[in-house]
Length: 62
Image (cartoon, rainbow, N blue to C red; front, side):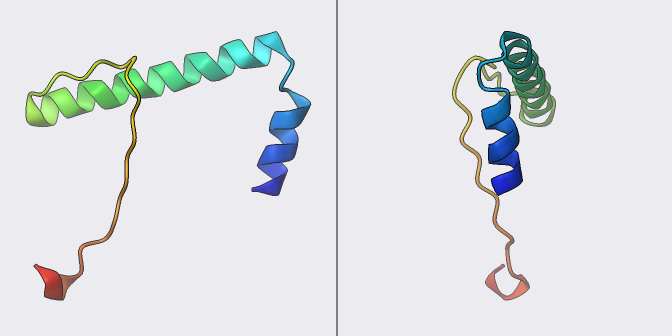
């Protein structure tokens, strides 16, 4: 993670980088919202905050 932090610090004040970063984030959120709608029929606003957690379900806990 330290390399990622270093790279982000280098581009922190770069307006073009920030615009690209926001665009990529929004595209991914829209794609996730569309997937959730296709699978569950639940419509989610891509502008909302997404907090996802994933954990493996062990065989013996099923």
